Image (cartoon, rainbow, N blue to C red; front, side, top):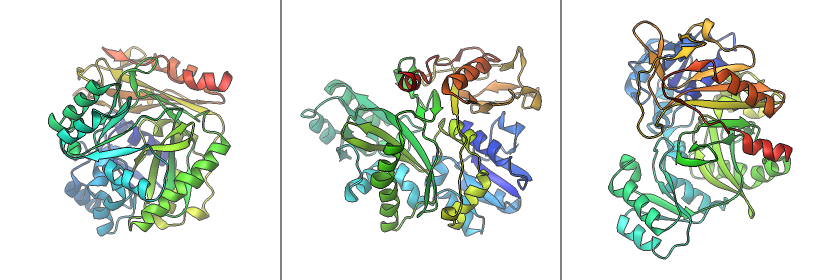
Length: 435
């Protein structure tokens, strides 16, 4: 089979490495891919993830048998719709279903209409009205851009001045472009945060191993929000009883709501949850695999990924037994200094003191994976940095403490000027497990 993966980050690299385990996967193309992904797939850097016309042309010209649209933007732009229209099976939701992430206003309205637990909220399309509302609001609260914003369109305000600044940043300064034409202002929820990704064919749903993300740039959860500085799985706060409650009050009702609205969801549905004193509530939905949650969840998947994705596409997920490994996984992100704000690119990447290249010689070894995210090939064939989050180092082990130790040890093998990583990934989870 010829496979196509749309996207070019660490999430896509994790998906590609898992797809390669199926012997039927003769060739995998990544559009656009990145320098490190070239180790595991044929990258086409000239075609971006949002170039839908070119993606469709490429898929048709190369006889693609199955496509995975992994990134939010092409999903929202209807990439799956277009590929389906030319007869190519796909993993991922169509554009109507992708609105569950593409519009926070749509998602909040869905939850309100179908009594799915979430934070209280208000929607504004006029900044003056939003600011007037904030003068009488309680704090802290959360201000969210309506549309897609690379995971950065959520601002937490501790007081009125911060909330006013957030509204101006999103709606007037257009820090996130047209995604900020509308905003959602919602109550600030407290409690342990949990990420649960789930395979679903619109009716059947198979939750994956739970995970815990670390969004803040600085240690002890300080600094700006990022796309994610590291993850661990499973999340110790997500007990069997909690999983049952979430299935009954959130997961199944969400699928039923999407069917009722005429936009059944097929693909990977991401539930961002807060385990509040009143019970679990939805913080956000994503219409695709999370990043970097994917980098700790997929290594624990025992069942063949391509088989699962085909069952989702064919509507037969309920007939498939999906199995997971015991143990734990930990991912540590290596970022460029200054991320998520200003950072330099083009820094040479080394592996154990020598230039890193996309070759088997630069693999980390058993139980370890290096998922490339923000790097590219230099003219001499070596890798240089090209983004804020450069790569994720993932380890699997019988215990979380062992996985973390292995991931941090492996992270020392890789270097580049300005390399930054949080040294406290997984510590909160360890305290929950061992305390």
